[in-house]
Length: 353
Image 1 (cartoon, rainbow, N blue to C red):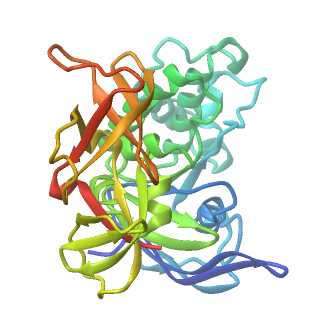
Image 2 (cartoon, rainbow, N blue to C red):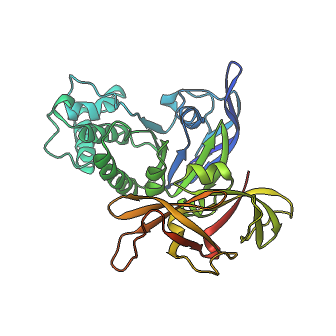
Image 3 (cartoon, rainbow, N blue to C red):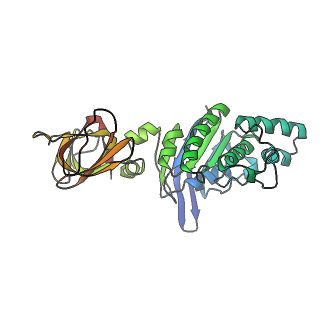
C-alpha cells in the first residue's frame, strides 16, 4: 500500500535555526496520526511542510506517492484546519462551508448538496443559516472541519484545533473528532502539545523534540515502553530514577540500591528507570519491604483528586509519586506513615538518558 504521507530525510532551516532535522516519517492511509511535543519542537513546521505552507530545505515529501515538496497548497490533496478556525464572519455556515467549492467554480446546486452533507456529518443540521458569531467555539470548530472536508481531501491536517476550547468541551470534541475521522475514513494528521489528547485520539503518535523525531509508535507503546528519558518524562507522569545497568535483569540505582529491571543495555550503561505512579502500590511497611521490587519509605504528602489519591513518598535519597484509585477497601495513609512501595516487574521501563 502507498503511504498517505511520506517524509524522507526532511529538514527545514530558518536562517541558522534548524526547525526540523532530517526526519523520516510514514503516515498510513486512514489512520489518526498525531505529532506531539513541546512548543518549538518542530511539529507545526512539519505539518506546514505537508500542507505546502512551508517548503523543505532538504529532503523528499510525497502524498500518496506523488512528490509534492515544491507544490503550492492548492496543488496538494490536503486541507488544513487551524486553531483560530479562520471563518468568514459575514458569511453563513452554509456559505462558509461551500466557499472552497465556489472558488473552484463548482455548480451552485452541487455546492449546496455537498455543503449540506458536510453540515450533517458534523451534526450542525439547522445551523446552516447562522453566522459564526452566533455559534459557540465548538460549533465554529465543526464548521471549520466541514469546510475542510467538503473539498474531499485525501489527508486532513489539524494544527491544534482544540486549543481554544475549555477543558470539558475539548474532551467532548476529542471523542467527536475521532468518530468523525472513522466515519470519513481518511488520514488525519493532528498536531498537539497535549499528551492526554494525543493518547486519547491517536492510532500512532510521533514524539518530537528540538526538531528531532524521538519515537513513532502506538499510544500504548509510547506510554508503556518510551524510547528514552525525554519521552518517558513528557508522556504522562512518571518517576525517573537514575542508575546503572548491572545485568539484563538488574539495575543499580544511584544510591547503590539494586532493583529488578529488564533491559538490553550493556552492563555499566548509565540509564534511567521509569515507574508510572499508577503502576506502584502502597502497603503497610514490612521488615522485608526493601527488595528488588519494593522500597520502604514514609508518606510525605497526600493529594486528593476525587477519583484518586496521589502519595508523595520520601526515601532516604529520593522521593516517589504513587497514584491509587479511590475505591472501596483501599487503605488510606496519612503523612508520616511508614509504608512500603512495591511494583510488578513489567511496571519498570529502562530508558536511555
